[in-house]
Amino acid sequence: MVLLASIVLGLAAGLARAWKGKRPYQTYDLKYSWLVLVGFAPQFLAFNFRPTEMLLSKWASVALISSQLLLLAFALVNLKKAPFWALGLGLLSNFIVIFLNGGLMPIQPEVVQKLIPGPSIGLWAIGERLLMTKDFVLPIADTRLWFLDDRFILPAWMNYHVAFSVGDVLIAIGAFWLLWSLGGPNKEKKEFSNG
Amino acid sequence: MKSLKNELIILSSKMTAQKVRLVVFVLTLAMFALAAGAPANTGGVGH
Image (cartoon, rainbow over all chains, first blue to last red):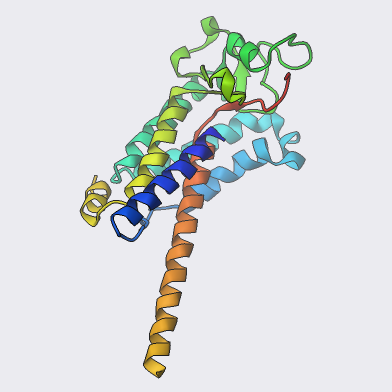
């Protein structure tokens, strides 16, 4: 939801920018965009689609790693577009910490406690996957590259319970930047697309 | 009259193609962001 918000905001900002400058809002040609669809599918089946998420729970880490490898390839072939540096770096950051910690995104028990206050009995446990998310509850002492894990939470007044990583922030910035740049002058678009 | 009609058809198909391209572009980016990101969204669990 946090990532989708950056897309909605980026699209709105880009459209407003194009409208203000009386320019068309034009998209880029993304190379090998089919990699995104193929990469998204295993994650959708393992994390978002009720009929298969229980079935594939043992394969969740395999689905996540293989999916992110395909997305890394997609980011790599599109690096000429400047916003893909942020998108790619965010993905790489998430991928490294996920890969080094067993295939799921580590999250500290203290952060989970903030997300789900009260007794943890039956809801979550250290050393186990957090509900049906991409996260795995791991103490900081056992986490490799702990500073890349899901450690940030939104302020309480927002009443939205989510933890996110540095990588997620970079992905959100990259998505916003890409959509915002589409409303810019042609010269800027060319500069972006030439890296 | 015929050429005006043809131009309108070409213009509308061009506009439709642009909109389709935009929708595909945004959908691709949304899929990328959702799959590349790994936020822990616990929804209303425990609240």
